[in-house]
Length: 410
Image (cartoon, rainbow, N blue to C red; front, side, top):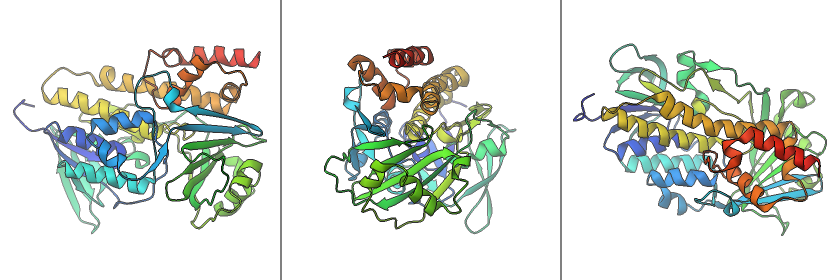
């Protein structure tokens, strides 16, 4: 397109990657319209942010709003297995950058980001369901059904799919690909936690390993209002003896003594949700006239809370490339977007694999941790999975394999 034209961008989805991408493009002078299938606020899982997210929130001009929203401060992660507990303080990380973040109710957090994007001039159309696409012409065209059942057509210079687990373009364009992970299922909900243990640190996410099944784990994410997000993750076969999610979650928590004690006064006042087979991949993260952001492209696993970080990183990368493309500069979406994004995703993948086969657990629960190595691992847990100055990013698999052997040898 000519450099004196205003580029028009359609974004599918107003979640974190969509709102961040929308703000970044709008602030560069482009015309952005977001099509969101739901009406915010709405419930979403993935409440524990990583410090790396804050850089992208700051880049989009939303940091002050997030800082002032009253979300639960977060400075690290606590891991528990039987009588062992280890903590990672994100401010002790190897990589330079922000070392703290927040634990957020995603309904309120996502609405805040969307409102900030609209304040900057982004046009969000709510309750709009994208039902068909056409990328064969000069400009991409989306067919959309509104809340009244009326069909409308939208045209733009480029489309960014930020639809998350909705995975609109992967489904419509037959881009979906097996993730390579086993089919796992999460049971989760929000509870009134009533935790009275004075040793419990609400500033950290708590990851607890099942005492008898090292590939089964629980999350506990405290919020600032006395409530928490609580969940358990296992392969689907693990849940077969239970008929309903509410009973299953309560009884599985009952199998872990430290959690049972911590939550002894808790009130389970909301229905327990479930999601199965959430890991996803695609054949390509981009094509003629479009690119996929965040979970619309690939989702690994919730264990290290990497989803929102990857989503925001993809928004930052994609909008920078699109800005260059609109200015008629030469761009290569594979070299400039897919490969750089995938490098960080692959780093997370190495650690997710090692978590479920028990190797990474041998590392984090090792009794003689070296501070400099712990700082490098801490950087990845804080979301800095693209820092290739970190040896555990640059050579993730080889470095981790060596570290596992050293830990196992004592």
